Image (cartoon, rainbow, N blue to C red):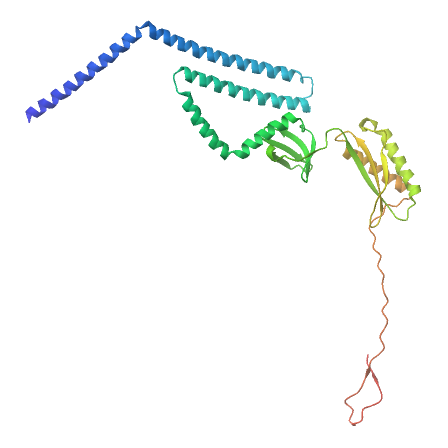
Length: 334
């Protein structure tokens, strides 16, 4: 028993001695390598390469910032809500962010390559992962790409009045992926850029203020039409600053409705002014019609009442008479 304990102790001591010798050998080798000038030259060269790559990335980022600043200086005099300034700000941020990510990615790949890491395997793995993510995020990628093209096409701006399907509202924000539109009732629509395929913009070029007036069939159009033209001309004289043509156009006859003859007044105005213009025209026409006694018709319904004739009293045979011979005298019923 004592012999076994002594044997175990000697074994442990031998293992410790071998481990110590191995550590000493490793430290000796490491110290010898540290004193090797070639190692220091290699490390210094590697460090210089990494610093050079980092410097190139930083210089590229600086150039991107300067380009974005110069781009924004072109529209610095415009108001903050101006469409051109907002579009320039959005594009500058988008391009700056994309360029930053691209530069850092290229710089990281070059640094890893300098460190001796197999970049090809990493790129292959990243490609497979990107392909899987792409299949899972097709809608997101489609929305982002559509948003970028929408910004470059310059077809919609913040503050524009647009129609999307049956919804009409004002554009409040244009992002790379989402577009926010505020409807007249206050509802906020958030529409992905990929779904914005067909839309109408009522803030580009000109819009028409259109007022349709119903006239009674009994009215003399030769009398009423000059009144409408006079009212439209007076309104145009008072609102020249919003007009894009000399005077409104009176279009008659537009339609034969159920209870009225429809006449249209149309005029080109600046975008956004059409609603107030239509309200003013309707108010002026109503006042002029009231002064001249011109009737604005409303749906009428003519009801004919037919007088029903009273039926003559029926003749009833009394079948309860005691005699077997029927009575010849008719009985009147109430």
